[in-house]
Image: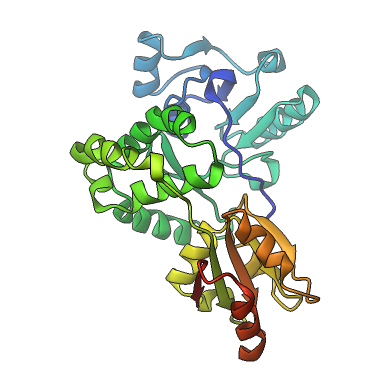
Length: 308
């Protein structure tokens, strides 16, 4: 991964755009989806940018670029056809410690902008690191179809209830299980039923117990061979225990904030410890059925064990 993906708070951003044509217009319109403060410098502007300037949506400086314009900026987009000027802005930005994006010149870019599927506050950002823009557009189009248009409204509703759930459930695992139950319900896809579903589930929280579970995953030799059900349970896990022969590309598919541990083969106490604490444990293994049977027999019968 050459480019590190990051979401930056737009409230903290002051952005300079050099250029006033159609390419600059697209960059400005993208930045104006955030609360960023945008300044455009150019001898002339496109019709769209002129209107944004008239509406005080952007600060317009009629003229040519000067490196003093980088003062107090965090990002600069360079959208000119002057290669010498583009190179100069790249150098000025380095000295000023400002991140520069020079359109259509990857070698001069300190950062690149991803392809975005916007369901604010849910945002999906993708990049091919400039290697295959057509493939990137293909997958963005697929995701636009797959991701519901009302997902942002669903996310906003859940966000408004987070503190209530924190106050009600004093355990991270319990809170996670609550939201998993909420989002896995078909009613959560209908925004008119969100409040009803939430009230139904929260009424059960006094007796809500997050059950410990063990997911034993007979791990294939390639991540593409993992089933959707397997991946779903890997994403539910609080901790992943894995054997020495499990590839890192598979281990990385476990939920990002889950703990990861190499299996201690001396005994099964490693599993029992986490299951006793009510956690969901994922075991990535290529071991024999006899070894797995011994593990299952050692686990309390109240623990739900799933094989994949």
